[in-house]
Length: 469
Ligand code: PFF
Image (cartoon, rainbow, N blue to C red):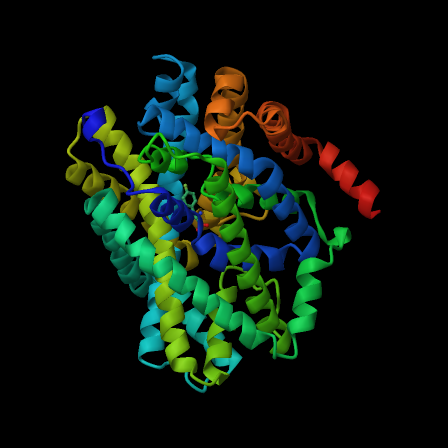
């Protein structure tokens, strides 16, 4: 595509909505609550928040800037802002690998949400107890044809929206559905304030107890800050490449990170208020929201409508994120290999769909010791399913390492001039602060966490121990 005719967002607000649409998704509503539950609450939340502020923001700025400057896909953007043939294409490649793996399991979880939307519509949860709802979830996990069906629907919708292109496909939906999701979450927040478990949920989430946090939990918190902000794989380079050059970035970036974090926290408060009000287990794992929310809806006035609306909006939030992942790959194949946009969306979509089968079968056919052992030799002694493997590999390793490289590229290769251009400001404190956080702080934090994993010692862990004893 010719650079001057390349598609672009209609303006600043459209970009914020699109970037927020990418950031806000299953990561906030499905993943954040369940991994917070598994990692003991407050201390995990604190590390996650610190990472968003200290590591996430500079990398978010770097990605959008690189895209906006190069007006090109996530692999070539590094070349265009630096020089052709540079090794700095590597983070772009790594990003594409992440995109493949993430979308493959993301679509399966998106399928679970669609399934729960369908069950809400036929009023399957009305009047059911928490235990009965848990039974529904177990039956979904063991029923692979049903998961396969919804995975097919989810992936088809994702491909269809990407085929519609930037303006017609992405923008139109984001404008209506993101604000609607915010409104519904606010409503649920008000509702759970009247539940008996609200106070306990607040202290679970906001009073840090470091004894509950393990090294793996710290890695998970760092990894999640990347996953939830869509960082480390070039999705925001790609979206930034459709942003007009005159738009200034710092406010945009702060707005996106703020909305994303707020949504995760509200989702957490809602979910754990239900957990503590109905005596559920906080560490119930990936099915957490699918058990807690229908339990609340089944007992709530207007629960039927709220349930239908909620799962619909979460499905859309998941779709807008999935679309940004697919778009990252499609932009690359379209621009760099001259493949027709439709053709590349279809081919990439089918390949990811097939890879997703491994996640579909992870909770049933492949959930056997033999298969778990295979994955187990790579990452964990206890064994992981393919689903867990793809999730861990990308969130805990690929995205943070990708982000680390992007920060280094921004801070050391592009340097001061680029930072000034990105902030469009002469404020020395801001520019120097960003320069050094891209050069040292953000990469240092990621390295520190990896250090922690290998040697079980890290600066962050040591500091955390000093402060919280
Ligand atoms: N940020 C999305 C979420 O929280 O659901 C997931 C995601 C989208 C991850 C795009 C990575 C990405 F590039």
